[in-house]
Length: 183
Image (cartoon, rainbow, N blue to C red):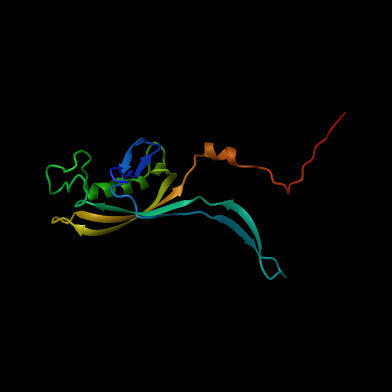
């Protein structure tokens, strides 16, 4: 495994005014979790000990993780301290990186909704919308701007209606069908 470069995770904007924009994740997450469930309706009936349970629909999957941001261990160096980035190129402060990720919660003027994104890391490609972001700032520069932060992010699975409609089966084996055959 020596000499093999580590694949970096990124968030790619799929639609809207920033379509194609990639937000680099400085440090790959230590872990992530994916949850998915179904929605059921419970109908109480008099005389029964338990309500009747009926399937309503499937819920979207949720991808959750923590993203670590740090000016001091950023390969490009702390932009607010060092005038020359150590790694060259994409030099952004933690404050800018937080704003870039939190900005994915804002309504895009072309879409009239927050933009769909894709979290990509090696074989994982999760098409979603950013559902929520929690920020924990743990270190500051001398002027009070964030130097180290942990973002708790949650992505909600997203499929455009055009890709969902063909998947929906409008028939069920418990429905009665009637056919008339003539000679």
